[in-house]
Image (cartoon, rainbow, N blue to C red; front, top):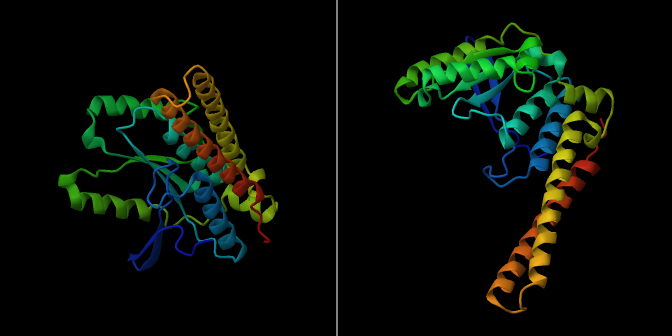
Length: 251
């Protein structure tokens, strides 16, 4: 595992040493260009290594949700699902769902969305029922000091909570599962398989269109370039799947 993963910030608060770990999102466009498989694999290795060495000092996990996103779909939904699959039900009391960017939405609309997200089983309700907290972060540009104060209050909420092993740590270290057999790994492989099916369908359509065009024509050449891009994407997906499938640690 890259010793720079995940990015961290260290500081002291109320005489305590605090380390904040920033987990890259599953959006396919993160800084550094790392794939979803690399993010999940590196994170799993980092967490299992800490657990094995008796350094499981993770007192809390915060999921950050911008109120500008009025639906949990696409990469937002996958990020939230990963949060649940990494933590597991037993660790929910040591988690927090933090909403931000309230200054960028109408307050009434935001409150309505917050109520919907917290009351529906496909969104935040299972985590909240399991003991997670739902809080708001004031991060408006004109409230820089308030932002820092809010952040300190959030960190303090975890001070008196004993660390609880995350589900991914128990799966890898205690049950000695391969990453591909953990819940997070299974869900990632399902996503990759779904993407592969869509790419194969697109590739089939492109090849059908190529058969209907004159070889060497502008339209045919454009379709051929699309075919090459789709094939490259399929190879990348296969590499991601192999990375997850073969990942195993001697713990």
